[in-house]
Structure formats: structure tokens, C-alpha cells
Length: 87
Figure 1 (spheres, rainbow, N blue to C red):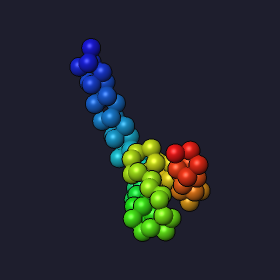
Figure 2: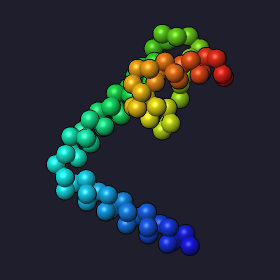
Figure 3: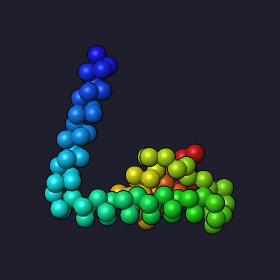
């Protein structure tokens, strides 16, 4: 059963890649998304190691980076607030 799911995952990934590469609109979307992803990772990295907020460490993982990609600067504030008040 595991092989069937892996085959479905690989097949759907290849089809999605084909659709993205065929459409010209997708290139602009992929470029913006990758720039936002890189910027989010850099901002979180600089926030962690600059010492601007002492005692604050936001881990670099897919959840935190995607939160910052989707929400932008308010996402950084959200993560900092959650880190400060919840944990």
C-alpha cells in the first residue's frame, strides 16, 4: 500500500510541475513565492541571532517560515507574541 501512495505522490508532483512550467503566469508566481520564502528565512535568522529581543528564539522550521511568508511582518510579530506569552 505504501508503494501505491508513493507512486500517486510522485505522479501528482510531476503533473503539477508540468502545469507550472507550461503556464507563463506561474513563473512570476514562483519567483515571488521564492523571494518571500528567502526573505522570511533571513528575517527569522536575523531576529534570532541579532539579539534585538533578548530571550526570544523562533525556530526555523516549515511552520514558522510559512507563517511569515503568508502574513509578512505581522507574522513575525505573531510568532514573537506567541513565543513571549505562551511558551
